[in-house]
Structures are given as structure tokens and as C-alpha cells.
Image (cartoon, rainbow, N blue to C red; front, top):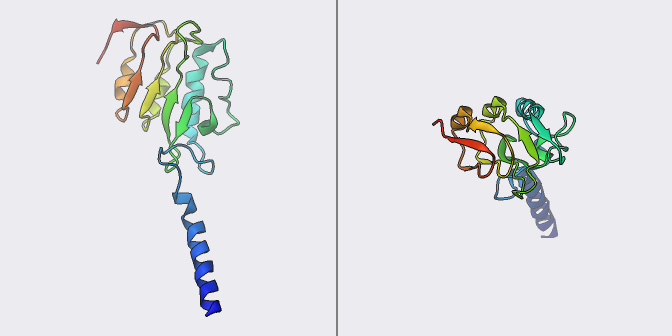
Length: 152
């Protein structure tokens, strides 16, 4: 009887170990073993080039680090695709990011959450390419210094 109990226990442990990569948090956020997609990392690096970051908000965005670990970025733990970009400056007084929002953002096809609050993009209108983000469910452009024209 002891042998069959031990065999059951070992089978159960192996089953748990096998299932572990498919489990994760319920938010769909990054699991360290996946890593981000290279084309998404490259898109982010192009976006960063057009921004002036006086306060170091994007200092973690480097080509030698997994972009799922970058500040303000979250990835799906199921696919590794970037699903969230939060560049909220947190305070209307600081406005850490300045410059233009790069069209490379449209390469982030799985993006569901985009928060650009309290930055200084100083663009006459909200860029038209934002309308191409078909999976977007949350968009916050409050006090990001876009003009009043909404192109879509």
C-alpha cells in the first residue's frame, strides 16, 4: 500500500510541475520566463528616441534588457506581447516627457492600455495612428498637451 501512495504523490508533484508555466497571475502580466518580442522592443526604442526625458522616466528602457521589465511596460504572461504602456507622469507639475509621439506605437498591436497623462507632447492634435490600436481598451491623454483636434 505504501508503494502506491508514493507513486500517486510523485505523479501529483510531476503534474503540478508540468502545469506551473500555464499558471500565473490573473492579470495577464509578465512572467519572467517569456520575455518581450524583439519587434516590440525595437518599436519602444524608436519611441524613446523622439522623447526628451529630463526626469529619467525611461531610464530602464535599454536594448540589453527585456522590455517586459521596463518601467511603465507590462506584457502578457501568456504571449509575451506588450499589453500596457503607462507613461503617466503622476503629477501635472512635473511633465517629464516632452517631444513627439512616434508612429512606431502602431507596431504594438496587442496594446490594451495606454496612459500618457501629464506629459508635454506639444502636438497640434492627437496622432491619427492611435486610432489604429484596435485592441486598446483604456486611453488616457489628459493633460498631455495635445491640441483640441481629434482626428478620428
